[in-house]
Image 1 (spheres, rainbow, N blue to C red):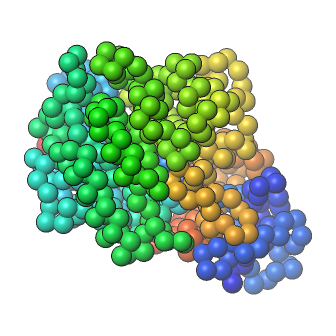
Image 2 (image 1 turned 90 degrees about the horizontal axis):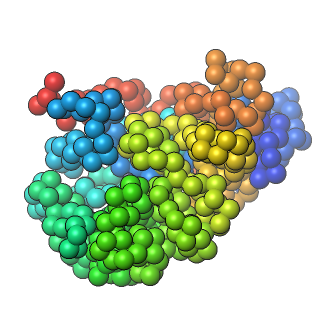
Length: 458
Ligand SMILES: [Zn+2]
């Protein structure tokens, strides 16, 4: 048993002082609030600051990290670009990755996440084939690289293998894939499901999907743009028993195309295909009708809001408060990783609501903490709270930095950044100690992984 003495800790009953947290075999075994002081437990490890449960990053595309600082202001050819021109640059980077270079990049990205207090990631994985769509000798070489990357970085991963079959919706129906999209596709949903089954087997041999394991295999529907109506049922069936994620209504164009082809919204199409519900996470959910919101809330779908991405890509502000009031669970994702700072995502969730509504305190602090730590959509119901029996994911935020000095502990959530995360335990293992990741210089790891992807350019 290892004992920690947290100066302040956010328990299910609120923030308490001098909280003793005992950890054994990766689980919290005892939590004793307000009862002890430092003199009473001299053998405990001190956690100075505010200790909270580990953050769940519910939407990630690890390779997008290579685009940071390259695409936000201007794009090749001039102009600020749009979501759709940004996507062209993203395809270029994707075309240069192989299993080895992806392992190096994702390992560094997941280490960056750990430094930010993220203890579990949902990786929305569609880069599963070689350029042109050929299979690797191991058809899941890219997915296995992601599992290895998370293990090396010390965080848990829900690997969401993504079905991606078509290049969008045209007036007459689904469009063929563009050349650069071929490596995202298995050709049809049955072949995707067969490969997913192989991934489950290979990952299970390494401990995935076991009780207490650090990896889960789930599935994703890229979007109604990339999976035709006739294939949705196959994906839903293959996804059963694990998390299912889907990009939903990030752009008005998707809604317009879906309406034109299928005569209904993307939410309705997914609902009638059985793709929504308590095991599903809808990502973005930015442009929804009242009927869509009632549908998502009524069936208990989890939402992954990605505010720093949505603002960068000029997507719009999603109806987070209304969705939450309707019954949907709100979680947070860093998506394209222009920013890897879930505290900033949580702050943006609230601040975007304030700008859109003209009201303050749209989300209470405890709701923001719930969004930061919501693991349900990744398939872990035993994480996200500091209570006996839960996974020992502990994140300590310093309260003595230039950003946080003087803050009341609870309100530090609205002042702290990833740079204030000092200590991170994942399943009881210390991954970040006094601001340092166990892999060492994560900035250098990122630079080494990203530079070769742009070496053909300036
Ligand atoms: Zn995404």
